[in-house]
Image (cartoon, rainbow, N blue to C red):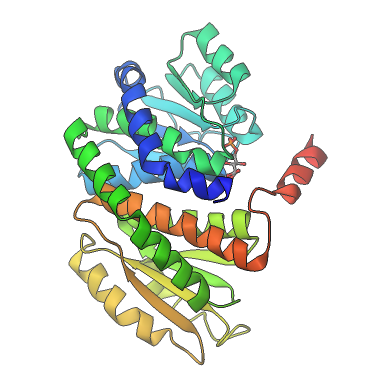
Length: 329
Ligand code: PA5
């Protein structure tokens, strides 16, 4: 089994450890005076923020939770906002710039990182810091980035996840791993060598984006993510030129979506089978949102690695991203 595949197989186990280890960080950061939460990060690290934000909405939390992928905080960010920087490496310039911006404005700050320099920076200033010690490409360290972010979002938002619910979701998701891997192999075969569009909604919309990113980085494959109901007002028309009949589409559906979104998920796929487009609808397993998120993350990760295997490409190689960083330096 490849190293990255190993990270997926360990995902629930690592998540469970990180959940345990992040308790103290959750209390420290969750006690900071804040009525809003802004999660700053890029790529694999930003995914943790997106998921926390979507779960907050699903839990009817009144705490506004948003993700920032960029250099500067919006001018509207006031002192009531807790800024949590999430960066596996601790060296991502956009995230560091947003953090400096938060520091300049004297906002409450917390940090989740594996980078020693950023850990020191937070320590010297007395900002709560959750250190990551798991060795993996950033996108495959999500199991260590999401739990601390969930702890802060749920604590501040008043929907604290209890340990039992977390353990149950992780155990059930882990129990489905073999089934998910078999499904990922079938999907990689079925979707053929075509650009992939991943469509989802609500708490699974961030997962659709992760599928796209994992297909891009691990498999070097052209992929896009789309979200319903918005996509029903535009993307549903944008499939005729120039790729008509050459797209693969995956719809990630959930029994927990708003009933009208579920209905759209039933109707829209058949309308998008234009020409020889390939469309597949996946009913994401699980009874609760967290279990569904865990299952669909693992399915997407495995799918991207199976596509990488088919292409014969090294999923750890991100040379163009590294070259770009060098050119920007
Ligand atoms: O998954 C990856 O490797 C990237 O998408 C990174 O997450 C992204 O470049 C940001 O880096 P970091 O997570 O170290 O801040």
